[in-house]
Image 1 (tube, rainbow, N blue to C red):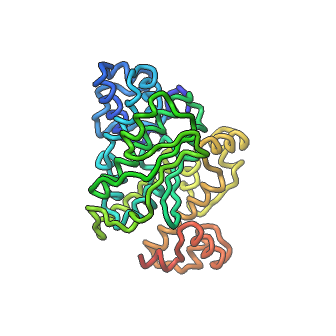
Image 2: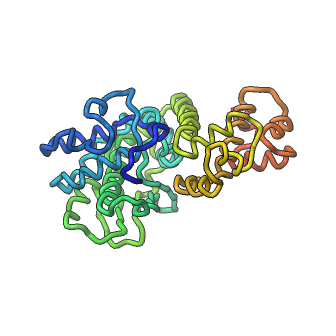
Image 3: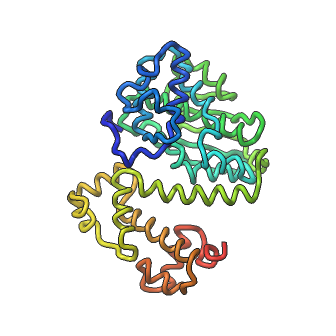
Length: 342
């Protein structure tokens, strides 16, 4: 992430994280104008439901917080304020899911809707469930800003699980891949568990026994509706973000036609090498976007038409139904019948 202001099509998130951080800083006597300096967000916008912001803009406010705040507890206090109700459909979908196992799974699936500053992964083992943060220190942000974001992310996880469970549900242990900072004593105060530093990787560990717990707001019908809405929002996000969004939109202009990368690069007025590099920087590739488009089209055709499987396969670029079925299984985990009769 650079300090340059984001493109308009990167601004797809409500400013709830920015608002929470500005509030925490205001309690320390730091004005909203100071907190938001250089972010391109005005104080009047942070509670505006119609205002859309980007991850890059939030990172700019975090950079200001690191430079202005005198309290090492700032990221923890911010994370503890970010309750799931502030996250819109993403938060409601997680709160209504039918088990904490579903909560962990859907937290990863829909994370793109949550102004994500870090990649999160979840792995279930026989005795524990583990959140990991594989790219915690991989961005171009200053090291202290990256640590700030990780401290906030850990606290958000603890806060969100408590929101879903309806009771305190602390981790068993938190591990960090860096040396203990001077404020290390704050970590267990906010995370509610022992904390280890100089670990091989950053991870937040829960007892796997909690996975069978039923969330306090679990509701089968609401969960299905909200998850369907999140699936649709994920699709919209793909069409709205950066260069990958531009490629997605270009491919969707003529459904069923799948030009090569050189052709699309020319339309976007860049070389294929530049397009490949920019997509790589956004964590995707041309082939992955083509797969996304094919999956979106196939799902839509199967749900809304009575076309044969062979016809749908042909429309999304497959020469035979068998290859299409295999691809659909890879994309969605389901065959055509599972999608059509959902």
